[in-house]
Image (cartoon, rainbow, N blue to C red; front, top):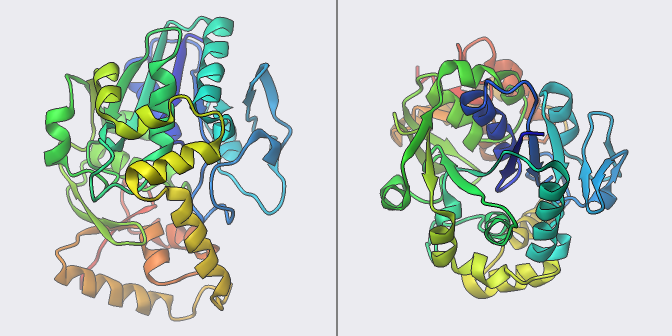
Length: 363
Protein backbone atom coordinates (compact mmCIF):
# COMPACT_ATOMS: atom_id res chain seq x y z
CA UNK A 1 0.00 0.00 0.00
CA UNK A 2 1.67 3.21 -1.19
CA UNK A 3 -1.14 5.54 -0.15
CA UNK A 4 -2.89 5.70 3.20
CA UNK A 5 -5.94 7.97 3.20
CA UNK A 6 -7.78 8.61 6.46
CA UNK A 7 -11.43 9.48 5.88
CA UNK A 8 -11.89 12.07 8.62
CA UNK A 9 -15.59 11.61 9.28
CA UNK A 10 -16.25 8.23 7.71
CA UNK A 11 -19.33 7.76 5.52
CA UNK A 12 -18.98 9.79 2.35
CA UNK A 13 -15.41 10.83 3.19
CA UNK A 14 -14.39 7.26 2.33
CA UNK A 15 -15.97 7.64 -1.13
CA UNK A 16 -14.26 11.02 -1.57
CA UNK A 17 -10.97 9.31 -0.73
CA UNK A 18 -11.43 7.20 -3.87
CA UNK A 19 -12.00 10.40 -5.86
CA UNK A 20 -8.84 11.87 -4.35
CA UNK A 21 -6.83 8.81 -5.33
CA UNK A 22 -8.12 9.09 -8.91
CA UNK A 23 -7.22 12.78 -9.01
CA UNK A 24 -3.70 12.89 -7.55
CA UNK A 25 -2.44 9.31 -7.42
CA UNK A 26 -3.63 8.04 -10.79
CA UNK A 27 -0.11 6.89 -11.70
CA UNK A 28 -0.17 4.32 -8.90
CA UNK A 29 -0.63 0.74 -9.92
CA UNK A 30 -1.86 -0.24 -6.45
CA UNK A 31 -5.11 0.78 -4.74
CA UNK A 32 -5.14 2.90 -1.62
CA UNK A 33 -5.68 1.83 1.96
CA UNK A 34 -8.60 3.92 3.19
CA UNK A 35 -8.97 4.07 6.98
CA UNK A 36 -12.54 5.03 7.81
CA UNK A 37 -15.28 4.87 10.38
CA UNK A 38 -18.30 2.70 9.77
CA UNK A 39 -20.70 5.43 10.85
CA UNK A 40 -23.79 5.65 8.69
CA UNK A 41 -26.84 7.83 9.17
CA UNK A 42 -29.93 6.35 10.77
CA UNK A 43 -31.54 6.08 7.36
CA UNK A 44 -29.05 3.22 6.80
CA UNK A 45 -28.09 2.00 10.27
CA UNK A 46 -30.86 2.15 12.89
CA UNK A 47 -28.35 2.02 15.77
CA UNK A 48 -26.86 5.41 16.82
CA UNK A 49 -23.10 5.91 16.75
CA UNK A 50 -20.24 4.21 14.90
CA UNK A 51 -19.80 0.49 14.45
CA UNK A 52 -16.95 -1.39 16.11
CA UNK A 53 -15.13 -4.48 14.82
CA UNK A 54 -17.29 -6.53 17.21
CA UNK A 55 -20.38 -5.51 15.20
CA UNK A 56 -19.05 -7.23 12.05
CA UNK A 57 -18.66 -10.82 10.95
CA UNK A 58 -15.88 -11.72 8.52
CA UNK A 59 -13.35 -8.90 8.94
CA UNK A 60 -9.74 -9.43 7.83
CA UNK A 61 -7.00 -8.56 10.31
CA UNK A 62 -4.25 -6.26 8.99
CA UNK A 63 -2.41 -5.44 12.24
CA UNK A 64 -3.11 -6.27 15.91
CA UNK A 65 -5.71 -3.46 16.16
CA UNK A 66 -6.74 -2.79 12.54
CA UNK A 67 -9.26 -4.82 10.56
CA UNK A 68 -10.12 -4.56 6.88
CA UNK A 69 -13.75 -4.74 5.77
CA UNK A 70 -14.00 -7.07 2.75
CA UNK A 71 -17.02 -7.22 0.50
CA UNK A 72 -18.02 -10.51 2.12
CA UNK A 73 -18.26 -8.97 5.61
CA UNK A 74 -21.68 -8.85 7.24
CA UNK A 75 -23.19 -7.02 10.20
CA UNK A 76 -24.70 -8.53 13.29
CA UNK A 77 -28.39 -7.56 13.55
CA UNK A 78 -29.76 -4.97 13.92
CA UNK A 79 -26.67 -3.12 12.62
CA UNK A 80 -26.17 -2.10 9.00
CA UNK A 81 -23.30 -0.49 7.11
CA UNK A 82 -22.31 0.68 3.65
CA UNK A 83 -18.64 -0.40 3.89
CA UNK A 84 -18.98 -3.99 2.60
CA UNK A 85 -20.71 -2.74 -0.55
CA UNK A 86 -18.06 -0.02 -0.96
CA UNK A 87 -15.41 -2.73 -0.77
CA UNK A 88 -17.27 -4.68 -3.47
CA UNK A 89 -17.58 -1.76 -5.89
CA UNK A 90 -14.33 0.18 -5.41
CA UNK A 91 -10.79 -1.22 -5.88
CA UNK A 92 -9.42 0.08 -2.58
CA UNK A 93 -8.94 -1.62 0.79
CA UNK A 94 -11.19 -0.19 3.50
CA UNK A 95 -9.93 -0.52 7.07
CA UNK A 96 -12.04 0.21 10.12
CA UNK A 97 -11.40 3.11 12.49
CA UNK A 98 -12.33 1.94 15.98
CA UNK A 99 -13.25 5.00 18.08
CA UNK A 100 -14.27 2.90 21.07
CA UNK A 101 -10.67 3.16 22.32
CA UNK A 102 -10.81 6.96 21.98
CA UNK A 103 -8.30 9.11 20.13
CA UNK A 104 -5.45 7.20 21.77
CA UNK A 105 -6.74 3.99 20.19
CA UNK A 106 -7.02 5.58 16.74
CA UNK A 107 -3.45 6.88 17.10
CA UNK A 108 -2.35 3.32 17.87
CA UNK A 109 -4.17 2.06 14.78
CA UNK A 110 -2.46 4.68 12.60
CA UNK A 111 0.97 3.90 13.96
CA UNK A 112 0.48 0.17 13.41
CA UNK A 113 -0.46 0.80 9.77
CA UNK A 114 2.50 3.14 9.31
CA UNK A 115 4.91 0.56 10.74
CA UNK A 116 3.41 -2.33 8.77
CA UNK A 117 2.96 -0.71 5.34
CA UNK A 118 5.43 2.24 5.41
CA UNK A 119 3.18 4.23 3.04
CA UNK A 120 4.70 6.87 0.77
CA UNK A 121 1.96 9.35 1.71
CA UNK A 122 -0.65 9.77 4.43
CA UNK A 123 -3.60 12.09 3.82
CA UNK A 124 -6.37 13.05 6.23
CA UNK A 125 -9.35 13.97 4.05
CA UNK A 126 -12.45 15.86 5.15
CA UNK A 127 -15.32 16.80 2.84
CA UNK A 128 -16.92 20.12 3.73
CA UNK A 129 -14.33 21.47 6.15
CA UNK A 130 -15.96 21.08 9.55
CA UNK A 131 -12.66 19.57 10.69
CA UNK A 132 -11.42 23.19 10.72
CA UNK A 133 -14.02 24.21 13.30
CA UNK A 134 -12.95 25.73 16.58
CA UNK A 135 -15.83 24.04 18.39
CA UNK A 136 -18.03 27.01 19.25
CA UNK A 137 -19.57 27.69 15.82
CA UNK A 138 -23.39 27.64 16.07
CA UNK A 139 -23.77 25.84 12.72
CA UNK A 140 -21.57 22.90 13.74
CA UNK A 141 -23.47 19.60 13.64
CA UNK A 142 -21.06 16.65 13.75
CA UNK A 143 -17.66 17.60 15.19
CA UNK A 144 -16.72 14.48 17.18
CA UNK A 145 -15.65 12.09 14.42
CA UNK A 146 -13.43 14.71 12.76
CA UNK A 147 -11.94 15.81 16.08
CA UNK A 148 -10.93 12.25 16.96
CA UNK A 149 -9.15 11.65 13.63
CA UNK A 150 -7.52 15.09 13.72
CA UNK A 151 -6.21 14.43 17.23
CA UNK A 152 -4.93 10.99 16.22
CA UNK A 153 -3.20 12.28 13.08
CA UNK A 154 -1.57 15.10 15.05
CA UNK A 155 0.16 12.45 17.17
CA UNK A 156 0.97 9.96 14.41
CA UNK A 157 4.55 8.76 14.02
CA UNK A 158 4.76 10.02 10.43
CA UNK A 159 3.78 13.28 8.71
CA UNK A 160 0.10 13.53 7.76
CA UNK A 161 -1.23 15.99 5.18
CA UNK A 162 -4.63 17.51 5.96
CA UNK A 163 -6.86 18.04 2.93
CA UNK A 164 -10.29 19.67 2.76
CA UNK A 165 -12.45 18.91 -0.28
CA UNK A 166 -15.62 20.77 -1.21
CA UNK A 167 -15.47 23.66 1.25
CA UNK A 168 -18.91 24.21 2.79
CA UNK A 169 -20.61 21.27 1.06
CA UNK A 170 -21.47 19.54 4.33
CA UNK A 171 -23.73 22.44 5.38
CA UNK A 172 -21.84 23.01 8.64
CA UNK A 173 -19.36 25.87 8.27
CA UNK A 174 -20.16 28.52 5.62
CA UNK A 175 -17.50 29.07 2.97
CA UNK A 176 -17.00 32.67 4.15
CA UNK A 177 -15.81 31.29 7.49
CA UNK A 178 -13.82 28.47 5.92
CA UNK A 179 -12.03 30.42 3.20
CA UNK A 180 -9.50 32.17 5.50
CA UNK A 181 -8.73 28.82 7.16
CA UNK A 182 -7.85 27.04 3.90
CA UNK A 183 -4.36 26.65 2.52
CA UNK A 184 -3.14 26.20 -1.05
CA UNK A 185 -5.24 24.60 -3.77
CA UNK A 186 -4.07 21.03 -4.38
CA UNK A 187 -6.43 19.96 -7.16
CA UNK A 188 -9.88 20.52 -8.59
CA UNK A 189 -12.00 17.45 -9.23
CA UNK A 190 -13.11 16.98 -12.83
CA UNK A 191 -15.96 14.96 -14.37
CA UNK A 192 -13.47 12.14 -14.93
CA UNK A 193 -12.69 11.98 -11.19
CA UNK A 194 -16.40 12.01 -10.37
CA UNK A 195 -16.96 9.11 -12.74
CA UNK A 196 -14.65 6.99 -10.57
CA UNK A 197 -17.33 6.94 -7.86
CA UNK A 198 -20.57 7.87 -9.65
CA UNK A 199 -21.97 4.34 -9.51
CA UNK A 200 -21.44 4.29 -5.73
CA UNK A 201 -23.09 7.67 -5.25
CA UNK A 202 -26.17 6.39 -7.07
CA UNK A 203 -26.95 4.40 -3.91
CA UNK A 204 -24.73 5.73 -1.13
CA UNK A 205 -26.59 8.14 1.19
CA UNK A 206 -23.74 10.63 1.62
CA UNK A 207 -24.91 14.13 0.78
CA UNK A 208 -21.64 16.10 0.97
CA UNK A 209 -19.68 13.72 -1.27
CA UNK A 210 -22.58 13.45 -3.72
CA UNK A 211 -22.54 17.26 -3.97
CA UNK A 212 -18.75 17.16 -4.36
CA UNK A 213 -19.19 14.93 -7.40
CA UNK A 214 -22.15 16.98 -8.65
CA UNK A 215 -20.14 20.22 -8.59
CA UNK A 216 -17.29 18.43 -10.38
CA UNK A 217 -19.89 17.60 -13.04
CA UNK A 218 -20.94 21.25 -13.29
CA UNK A 219 -23.91 21.58 -10.93
CA UNK A 220 -24.45 25.09 -9.57
CA UNK A 221 -27.29 26.52 -7.52
CA UNK A 222 -28.67 26.25 -4.01
CA UNK A 223 -29.14 22.81 -2.47
CA UNK A 224 -31.21 21.83 0.56
CA UNK A 225 -29.80 18.96 2.66
CA UNK A 226 -30.31 16.92 5.82
CA UNK A 227 -33.36 16.58 7.99
CA UNK A 228 -32.95 20.21 9.14
CA UNK A 229 -33.15 21.54 5.57
CA UNK A 230 -29.76 23.27 5.65
CA UNK A 231 -28.93 25.25 2.50
CA UNK A 232 -25.65 24.63 0.67
CA UNK A 233 -24.49 26.82 -2.23
CA UNK A 234 -23.12 24.83 -5.18
CA UNK A 235 -20.42 26.96 -6.82
CA UNK A 236 -17.14 26.65 -8.68
CA UNK A 237 -15.45 26.27 -5.29
CA UNK A 238 -17.34 23.00 -4.76
CA UNK A 239 -14.93 20.57 -6.47
CA UNK A 240 -11.74 22.12 -5.05
CA UNK A 241 -9.31 20.41 -2.66
CA UNK A 242 -7.14 22.52 -0.36
CA UNK A 243 -4.26 21.63 1.90
CA UNK A 244 -4.35 22.94 5.47
CA UNK A 245 -1.53 22.94 8.00
CA UNK A 246 -2.50 20.07 10.29
CA UNK A 247 -0.72 21.40 13.37
CA UNK A 248 -2.39 24.78 12.92
CA UNK A 249 -5.82 23.18 12.53
CA UNK A 250 -5.25 21.13 15.68
CA UNK A 251 -4.06 24.18 17.63
CA UNK A 252 -7.42 25.97 17.16
CA UNK A 253 -9.74 22.96 17.31
CA UNK A 254 -10.71 22.95 20.98
CA UNK A 255 -12.53 19.63 20.73
CA UNK A 256 -9.60 17.84 19.06
CA UNK A 257 -7.35 19.06 21.84
CA UNK A 258 -9.85 17.96 24.48
CA UNK A 259 -10.16 14.39 23.17
CA UNK A 260 -6.48 13.78 22.42
CA UNK A 261 -5.79 11.56 25.42
CA UNK A 262 -9.17 9.81 25.53
CA UNK A 263 -9.18 6.02 25.71
CA UNK A 264 -12.91 5.38 25.30
CA UNK A 265 -15.65 6.76 23.08
CA UNK A 266 -17.75 7.57 26.14
CA UNK A 267 -14.96 9.74 27.46
CA UNK A 268 -14.58 11.50 24.10
CA UNK A 269 -18.30 12.06 23.91
CA UNK A 270 -18.41 13.59 27.39
CA UNK A 271 -15.66 16.03 26.43
CA UNK A 272 -17.59 16.85 23.26
CA UNK A 273 -20.58 17.79 25.40
CA UNK A 274 -18.34 20.03 27.52
CA UNK A 275 -16.77 21.82 24.54
CA UNK A 276 -19.70 21.90 22.10
CA UNK A 277 -22.73 21.52 24.34
CA UNK A 278 -23.77 18.18 22.84
CA UNK A 279 -22.48 15.33 20.70
CA UNK A 280 -23.73 14.01 17.39
CA UNK A 281 -24.41 10.63 18.99
CA UNK A 282 -26.77 12.34 21.45
CA UNK A 283 -28.58 13.78 18.43
CA UNK A 284 -28.76 10.35 16.81
CA UNK A 285 -30.06 8.80 20.05
CA UNK A 286 -32.83 11.39 20.32
CA UNK A 287 -33.74 10.95 16.66
CA UNK A 288 -33.78 7.17 16.94
CA UNK A 289 -36.05 7.47 19.97
CA UNK A 290 -38.48 9.69 18.06
CA UNK A 291 -38.50 7.27 15.15
CA UNK A 292 -39.25 4.33 17.43
CA UNK A 293 -42.34 6.15 18.69
CA UNK A 294 -43.65 6.97 15.22
CA UNK A 295 -46.07 4.74 13.40
CA UNK A 296 -44.57 4.49 9.91
CA UNK A 297 -45.84 2.57 6.94
CA UNK A 298 -42.91 0.58 5.46
CA UNK A 299 -44.47 0.84 2.01
CA UNK A 300 -43.71 3.68 -0.39
CA UNK A 301 -46.81 5.94 -0.37
CA UNK A 302 -49.02 5.67 -3.45
CA UNK A 303 -49.08 9.48 -3.82
CA UNK A 304 -45.29 9.88 -3.64
CA UNK A 305 -45.07 11.84 -6.90
CA UNK A 306 -47.70 14.26 -5.65
CA UNK A 307 -45.77 14.72 -2.41
CA UNK A 308 -42.54 15.33 -4.32
CA UNK A 309 -44.22 17.93 -6.53
CA UNK A 310 -45.55 19.77 -3.47
CA UNK A 311 -42.06 19.73 -1.92
CA UNK A 312 -40.54 21.13 -5.13
CA UNK A 313 -43.09 23.91 -5.32
CA UNK A 314 -42.48 24.89 -1.70
CA UNK A 315 -38.70 24.69 -2.23
CA UNK A 316 -38.98 27.05 -5.20
CA UNK A 317 -40.29 29.76 -2.88
CA UNK A 318 -37.11 29.29 -0.81
CA UNK A 319 -34.87 29.69 -3.87
CA UNK A 320 -33.83 26.03 -3.82
CA UNK A 321 -32.68 24.44 -7.09
CA UNK A 322 -31.33 21.09 -5.83
CA UNK A 323 -31.94 18.72 -2.97
CA UNK A 324 -30.87 15.17 -2.13
CA UNK A 325 -32.70 11.87 -1.98
CA UNK A 326 -31.94 11.76 1.73
CA UNK A 327 -33.41 15.23 2.30
CA UNK A 328 -36.55 14.25 0.37
CA UNK A 329 -36.92 11.06 2.38
CA UNK A 330 -36.53 12.97 5.65
CA UNK A 331 -38.79 15.89 4.66
CA UNK A 332 -41.58 13.59 3.44
CA UNK A 333 -41.14 11.26 6.45
CA UNK A 334 -40.67 8.28 4.19
CA UNK A 335 -39.54 4.88 5.46
CA UNK A 336 -35.86 3.97 5.07
CA UNK A 337 -36.80 1.62 2.25
CA UNK A 338 -37.95 4.59 0.16
CA UNK A 339 -34.44 6.05 -0.19
CA UNK A 340 -33.48 3.57 -2.91
CA UNK A 341 -36.85 4.06 -4.57
CA UNK A 342 -36.16 7.80 -4.79
CA UNK A 343 -32.79 7.28 -6.45
CA UNK A 344 -34.36 4.93 -9.02
CA UNK A 345 -37.09 7.49 -9.64
CA UNK A 346 -34.44 10.15 -10.16
CA UNK A 347 -32.36 8.12 -12.61
CA UNK A 348 -34.47 9.15 -15.60
CA UNK A 349 -34.27 12.87 -14.80
CA UNK A 350 -30.85 13.47 -13.29
CA UNK A 351 -28.65 13.57 -16.40
CA UNK A 352 -24.99 13.07 -15.52
CA UNK A 353 -25.39 13.79 -11.81
CA UNK A 354 -25.50 11.11 -9.11
CA UNK A 355 -29.05 9.90 -8.70
CA UNK A 356 -28.86 10.82 -5.02
CA UNK A 357 -28.73 14.50 -6.10
CA UNK A 358 -32.18 15.75 -7.05
CA UNK A 359 -32.51 18.68 -9.46
CA UNK A 360 -35.82 20.29 -8.66
CA UNK A 361 -38.47 20.65 -11.34
CA UNK A 362 -40.64 23.57 -10.29
CA UNK A 363 -43.25 23.18 -12.96
